[in-house]
Length: 102
Image (cartoon, rainbow, N blue to C red; front, side):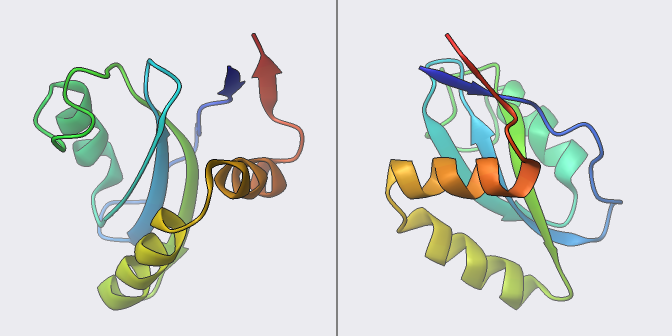
């Protein structure tokens, strides 16, 4: 399973973003929010999404920011339709060689 580095610098509250989480089982979850820190807390407490409930803890491994909610939602939709390999390439391409093979 490929482990990706966690995103350290998160966007400010109020900034719309599309994010990718890596769950404890190695799976990837894609979502959007305008309060990333709060959303991560919700995911890790089991309140974030049905998919991530029971798969925690989750780590944010990719973030893209947008000027509007509509742009973030559109990007989320597009990323959700990528293959696992395409999502991994997106994560790696945005952060350089930021993965750890385990």
